[in-house]
Length: 408
Image 1 (tube, rainbow, N blue to C red):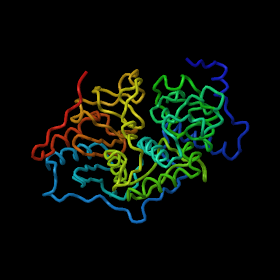
Image 2 (cartoon, one colour):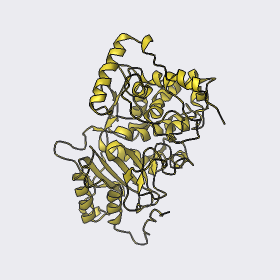
Image 3 (cartoon, one colour):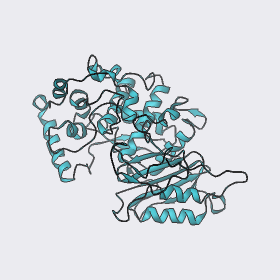
Image 4 (cartoon, helix red, strand yellow):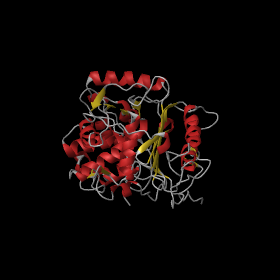
């Protein structure tokens, strides 16, 4: 087993502030003040870089009342639940069409919605696309091939896979009010990518532990840019959104012309997330064109021994847990699931504030809810929307009901 010396960890955590551009340091201090006032979560993302979508975006058609394959009362009940929980969008897709679409007043199908950690599955899809294009060999290629600064260090053992399944060994997510803490530098520094490469500490041997953190996901943008020679925003727009016929969006960058934040904070219309989900339902094929390598989606949906509820950028529903923590099985509490999912093969895009896209393979149904934090009471129940919608499916002749999650 790899041993990591205490001295090495201490050296990794030494801030580089003394060698920095004064303008960058002033910007960092301003952001840090805003971060502390907001309780550790950025609420304003600036600057933003355009992610160009299709020249002629194609909206997903809405099913007419006679074409719906889900009972109206189930859709109405689910929509009411979303509306009562501070949602910014609620969409249901099945049989190639929208079965339901709801937006609050002042918002519509074109509104740019803040994704938060829904950006993480996008980063996994980006890696898959780069593999399909031959720019990355496989998820098991060492990150050090693209980050040579790690050659000859314990971080050399980190694989591309580990950036997606949160087993990089880098320090897990937490909170610190120390302006020089690596966690804050990795989040809001005007050179956050290099801060992660140079200063973010390795606390476990790569591949040995699940440890959810934004820093790991943020490195995907750096890998994509170094592997392809293209800006992350341009790569996402050209290689993913445009083939899907999707609208464009914006992505937070650390400074003008700097590195994108691939772990959070992209803005896109709600239908974009549906299209990404449908792409995964169809094993990475869209309109007959393979965008992701064959088997890559299966890899995304495969859990690790360290966390049975997480694959590569995706949360998984194979095994029931009443509460599922972002921090992993070792942490108590987490998001409530009062009932097992009606589809035991369910997988999810899931982010802060219960931004969630439920993907049901057995019923070929996608359900989206985005928005701000639901009220604390009654507590958000992550099983209500999918189970309500799936429970309302009108079965076709000979169609079998989905097999639900198995309780342990």
